[in-house]
Image (cartoon, rainbow, N blue to C red):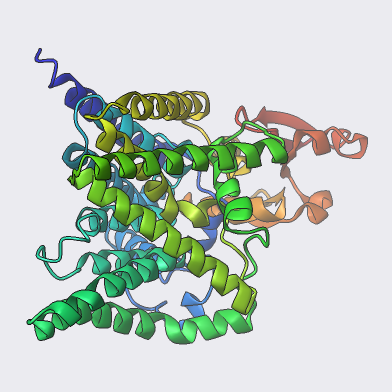
Length: 485
């Protein structure tokens, strides 16, 4: 095989593996409490019944995802996979788009290395298999990135990639920051050109069309909803510790999945990774200027550095003016591809220079770290955020096997579960049509329950152990299914 073809073959093999991985997990993972909560609120069957400001204002509502999930349920019927199909599609678009972008920007072994860095995040992949809006947001972001990375080339076209970023905002409001930052960058780059250009009207039309259209749509959708969210204190989720110390550090923490790291070490990892990435970027820019070299990776690198700076400054300014907490964990997904592409583009820009070894070394280190972390964290039975929901479906299937078919003259059964688990259990009771389940209550109703779902440590309590027997234990967590003796 031609040695130049091998990197592309490896990247395509990794793409195929990840598509199978997220598809299998979407079909087999138990529903999470957030998915169950959302699907319960959907006007299934139907299409537009829930598009009201009061509904959109909720933090649990990811509008584009919810509308498409409701559409899938209306067409295909209620099922776990129907709820997850939009997210699965968004995740697939992100993965394919990441490969296409890497194939355009990177050569040789830097292609599969960069592609793995963009995609081998186990926490991000969790959300490509469950019914939340982040996957669609990431897919839309990836669709807009190729044109954004040509942002200095004003002859390309009007910046309609902003429409993809706006669609990401409709998928999940956390993408608002990258949308506003990209819009700001377009204005900054276009206004000086308008002063020098004889075709000022054309330049203004190129700039105004996408910006005015997307702002109008987002204002129509979110203006009243944001007022309701503020009134209901829906903006509580986040950190006061800063964009890096609070936001990015939390993203690093959840990316490590189940690896527990002390907070001071976590901060060190975050700042060291940023230092490595931005230090490499500065070396690449200086090297290219010294050689008077301009290339697609260098143009992309400058655009990414500027975008990151605008996002950082904008988020910090918002916090100082309004006290808004800094986004954390999955709310920071929008910055992930930007941060990954910075060292990748820097390494590509250095590839033909005397400092190429710096790029190779940094990329190899990040590649080894990310791939090792994915290998440790990859699984087929749970998600990091909702690990306690891993066995909701198997537990209900066990209850169903014990009680159906049954003598319907017997009294209905009652299930006691923790508050968060109750959403998922109720979803499966409805979805599996378990008519013999009279109620799903909290653990405060344990005395009247026939079955109970709780942590193993709580089940070991003497007062519970004398009345209930352990009939199933979840291998992914410490939850157990109990049956009244």
